[in-house]
Image 1 (tube, rainbow over the protein chains, first blue to last red):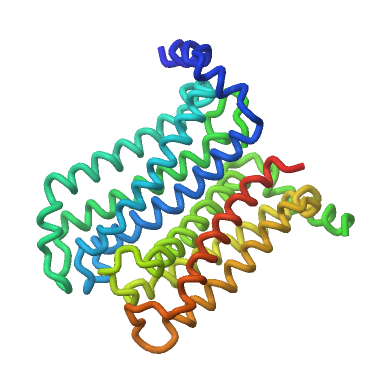
Image 2 (image 1 turned 135 degrees about the vertical axis):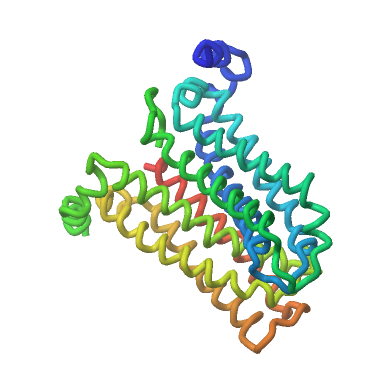
Length: 168
Length: 158
């Protein structure tokens, strides 16, 4: 079903435009994808370390002020990722490792949603210097592990499960 | 020079990295190189944007630990980088873009160590960044981006 969708997508005007785009579009997007990854993991990683109990003297709300930068990294990677997928859909939909990457992304997203809705206010109210409650530590660990999973699966795409000639 | 690069590439280790039929060779080493990238550049950029005035409520002193993460990431990337280089020495060693990447990293390291000295050397870091810190932070942002760009382009530039 997804491969039918992939071959349909591959024939859409937008995909055709991207496929015949200047040769440097793909490397350019890859570069942004790596820069976005560093920004996202740097900022989100710092926040997770704070939830795990590092930098205790800094209020969680202060560390959270950096989150817009993580969002910049994420948006950059979402956009460049969409460009990859729309250009060469079968290369991704046909690769189980890509689905694993998407699974890790969904876990990371749900985890962030649970944090925001169920623990956001509690975290913001936590006095500086106090140990973080266990649920926050679990959320931080899940976040770090799922982002590591996203990175692992993403980097393994050309090597693991790539049926269609994937570029390195 | 070229003979030396070829000998590196054809060494047992070089051949193992490039063509051992296991995901633990080239793919995992390359993946760890990306983990190291995030550990070096992520904290560096957080520190840079803070020094440029963003998130001013965050005490600069609390970012002292960033250097430990960056250092671990750098050790990962120096070792995985050497392994990757050996496996393709005769190709990468002859590319100007590879040397551009190394030059960017060398400059970024100099800037990072100066930044550390300027901001963290004299006891608890002040929340008013010293005057030269802004320039160093901007240089750090740009040089790490240059290193990432050159690294990615190594797969494309002939």
